[in-house]
Length: 447
Image (cartoon, rainbow, N blue to C red; front, top):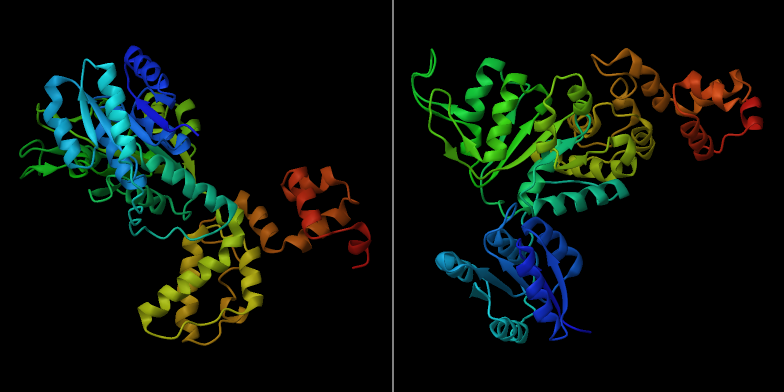
């Protein structure tokens, strides 16, 4: 099989010339138009050698080199650079690049360097993966989620994480950081819902002394604190509308102007945002700027609710009980199977956060003994405080599913459409539940 070479070059003519030159040597060649595209192609194409331009939009050659060092340390990489950026190319070699070639490119040099790199290609063991925040679960939903997090971690693109409260949006953001080339750089979290609107501008962009009443000294904003790292904007839907234009300017132009200052400070920050609100609806209602939404939503990741990954509950339960037992220095209690079954049927409106809180309480009251269903009475059989009234039907449905479905079917004489409307769910969902519990008219009528 021919050896594979990836060319990452933003200039179309140069990219095509390199491809033709290398294909004359019977190499299998793939191309990418920028660094982000290059990283994606690297994942799928699995090249034996990479040629990359140094200066490119979105992600430059250095980002590509960092990705290669992290994920494919045995694959040689050659930098293509203009004469004026030779010092940067030399730095790249210190960081692991195989060689560099100055433009304009000589075809014979390209072939010679390619052969030399491929001859010296070694199969070094992969670098150890960094210690990651815990994302517990082996369900299909979690496997898919972890693949998405790894995909976006290697790029500079902005990421929007959506999902209900308690699903682990911040944990996902920290995982992206931990998997990225920025993993040793700052991770700054800013909760847009917890900061008063009048203080948010200063929190984001910083201020200089005397900018407003109470500004007794300079303050560095979150965007500057996160330099070279990641800024996590939690609850982005609560960002005041008047600040959204300024954030858009900072994200697009990569500059920050502190409050009270005319100086523009350059920043290199990966933006990860999160929300449990319907941002698209907020855009149509003119509560959120569409241009900022599209800028932050280069890639969207949705965190599945716990009800969609109920098969992860035993694994999550074991993890949290192990964690809490170490914290309180007592034996890890065993959860009775009956209670674990109840856990799998409960809707968990507070998602993983609620499960964690319940287990922490049960850990304390059990004092290391077996945890029984009696200990959980009152914890998982009623909606949480402040629950929305219109959601209570679904919560009761999932808490007492079989009983409610049978009652609705009997009342509606097994008319699926009527029963589904009575339960407040779709016909397909009702059919799925009937099949799941093997419900039949005779079974229900015999009750």
